[in-house]
Image (cartoon, rainbow, N blue to C red):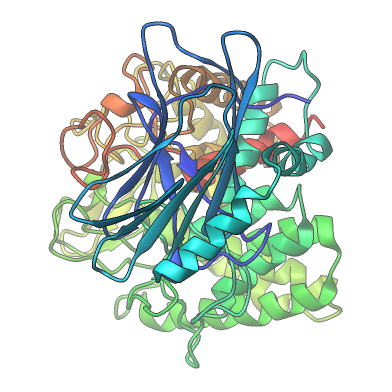
Length: 561
């Protein structure tokens, strides 16, 4: 069994719904420190558990997970820290030094022998109890609650709790000599931290892209998460998609974001049928497939009625005035595709709609129903995408500017989605392959960049040049569908090797990566310059322990298990 063992700031430390109740509305979640072996917990007033300073000689780790730490001492002894229960961290220290609990704000301090209680005056309390080589950190909403929880925690055997956490890694592990064994374990660790229990808007277990800073559900993220979790627990993967279905309105609309109490008024790419079929491959649950089929069909009809400009046969995203996030709906927040305020017939939304129609047809037939209506809608979209969005001159697809009556020629990664959707003719697919293999365009050292190198807007800010793992995953699938196996294998290996390289350097999987593979992900812009040490409350640069980067990498690696 191999564990992740790279320490770096920003890694998540959280209690997972995989182990018990874990509610976003009352979360006690932290990230690892950059300058010491410690964890910053993001309650209303930050709390920090410090175990030891990081000196010139860095400590070695037996394992670092999203809910455990195993630190090796100078004489080979171990120090264990485990998120054992909801709001309860327990540990065993090998050295005589006691852990320290800091409060980054005003707090009333109560000391009772080996017990320290902090009251931050906002309804939050924490308690640190140290007894011999054991300690317990408890969080809650009264002094009595945290005192009792800490007393319970100090009686727990941290080593036994640690061994219990490792059961998952014993079930899912690559061979020790596998080049990506630690990366695989890291993905599994982060995936655990994504999970919340049913509450409020959700009647199913649901997932979040990053736990911090967002603590909410996003539509297409959840489907990408389910694709990874299908390799661990297909029933759980189904839950993650059904949590999205929980949000569907009577008219078929599904919001792009929700938490336990709020829902957004815009939507996100339709990928439910595509994702459900992937999960069904593992679960074989026809009742699940039927439920998602009904929801995805209703959502498709809502988009058909609400995202086609009057008289148009193709689809346009809702956009807003925010220059840094003009198209939250498509997920490509600050893409130069949307630097214009004109309405665009969108290559990605039109392809997602075609892809969903194709998968809805396949699901209908799997359920013993006719898929003819969906076949017809796919054929209509295929014809219109080819007629309106394909540029024969460039051998490429572009958005179409309705106001100007012309292609909106931004060379974006979204234009490879016709491969995923099965839209291309063999000749068009060959043309797209040529662009993917052109070093002056999309064949960057780490491909596929979100914007081509030859586009004037190419840069290092989010969707303006960096590489996103979800698009690489969809392009790999599209290449495989068209028989471009060698290119698909090359892109898959490039993706895994680059993600692994920066995991080894930075301890996490990032939201996006430098397509030139020169700059570290934490040095890239995210709607503004990066800030170090990592503090998303000052500026949310490339998010660490990012959801779909982990789940889709895990899915790519699971093919080897």
